Amino acid sequence: MTQPVPRILLVDCDAFYVQVARLEDPEGAGRARLLVVGGAGGRGVVTSASYEARAYGVRSAMPTAEALRLCPEATVVPVPRAACSARSREVRDALSRLSPVVQAASIDEFYLDLTGTERLFRGESLTETAERIRRTVLDETRISVSIGGGTRRLIAKLAASRAKPAGVYVVAPGEEEAFMRELRLADIPGIGPAFAEVLARRGLVHVRDALEVQPEWFERWFGPQRGRWLASRIRGEDASRVDPHEPRRSISSERTFFEDRDDDARLERTLARQAMAVAGTLRRQGLRARTVTVKLRDHDFRTRSASRTLPEPVETDQAVFEVARRLLGELRRRRRVPVRLLGVGLSGLQSEPGPHQLALFDEAEPLESDRDRTVTRVLDTLRERFGADAVVPGRVLGDAPRGGDVSSSSDGAASPPRDERRRSARRPPPGDAR
Image (cartoon, rainbow, N blue to C red; front, top):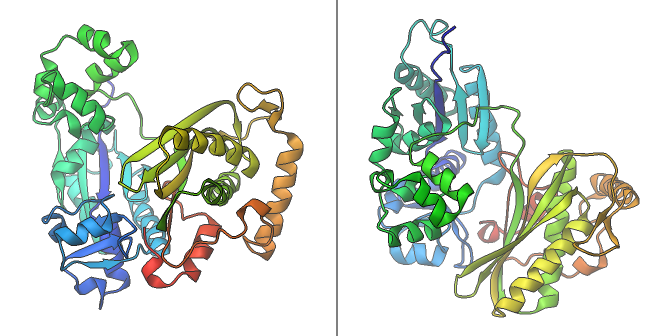
């Protein structure tokens, strides 16, 4: 029996945070043509910018102060976090009525698997189906989306970039390699700036350049695993499936300080509060994490990170903090300069396994015990009942974010951790930004 040709779409919400900010404040942000959503006061970073502002060179993750230098007439507004989560759910609900399989890749990206739906949609081409979905989402949610399509997830994602803004671009079966040849290597997900620079030093900038290289050379240059991965990606190959039950990939929390910090004790207090936030989110989702990552952005905007993958997953505040504290110490020893941003992230997420004992790196003392997990869940119950700050370790006291500090969290399409939401509600509007 002939297998049906895969029909995959990626629905990408156009400048999602900008759209939501305009919908939530039609008389303010809604009237601003040059709109930047993100940190205010020069300490935060841009979360998103309107297409008009992007024409001036404004980009996400750029310091807000730099964005305003490039586009001084821009209006800067905070990230409407709760509204973004609500709008994301609306888009997913609409897509669930239009496709049999929907997977949220992030708060503003959704994969659809329409394989075998030709008869259901009365012979509609994938382009026609995508255009119908685009119009329906806009009508039902007022969110404009761009849609890319193809036979694989990777092709659909790359095609969505071609569709922006508010369009549809579908790569027909058999046209994958021709489509890939038109791209730069840096366009491919997984090829970051550092790897792109390494490739460029070998004269490889565009996909067509790399396609002339025998895969064996990639393995010699970059090792077997990375070499095979690169040879596969430049051909648009991708074996991953659209899975609505795919587990969340990461949970993180970041904080941009009102003033650069160079005091290790204060940084550790902030780290402890962030560990509580991400570990709390982890437990509410019934998950544990194997990898802990600490991120620093120094006063000169140099960003550094360190990670540790553990033999067994953890879930308690204390376990996450102990690993993160050591990683922070490593980063500070390598470069001791004032810090403007501190973050902690969890990845390698998995459902809760059975009881286990876990040592901290090579130490005999367990990092997390059954008793620790039981005590932590009792504390969760108390915080749920009396508030996030009802019971906190002494090491976090005195570290409440100041009015100018900027806190943000990221955990897929879910809303921020509860204690982050509570702190955001208490901060004055100029500080409530990424």
